[in-house]
Amino acid sequence: MHTEGKLRQDANLISDENGFFIASTYGEGIAKDKENARRLVACWNACDGLPTDILESMVNPAATYTALMKERGELVKLLRDYMNKAPGSMAKAAYILAKYPEAPNA
Image: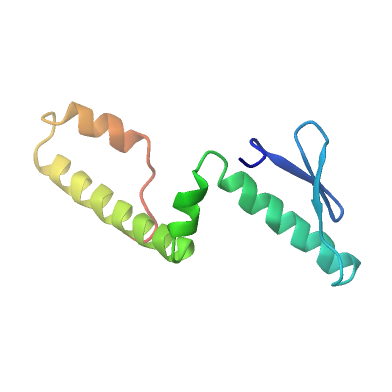
C-alpha cells in the first residue's frame, strides 16, 4: 500500500499532507531537481484516488486524455445541435450541458 492523499513540494523535497518526508530529487542541479519534484508531486496529486494497477495499465495517459476530450467535445456539440432542433424535449440533457462550456475543438 502506498501513501494516500496529496503530496507537497518544498524545493527538491516531497512530503505528505502531514509533513512526513516521502522522497527527494537530486543529481540534476538545483533548478532541475526542484522542477522534477514539482512534476512528480503534480502527477501524484492528479492521480490521487486512482488504483495503482489502473495507472500501470495506461499505455499513454496523455493520448487517452486528449482522445476523451475530443470525444467529449464532439458529443457536446452533437447534443447541442439536437437540442436546437427539439427545444424543451431534453431537460436532463440541458442540465448536463450546462455543466460544460463549449469545447474549443468542437
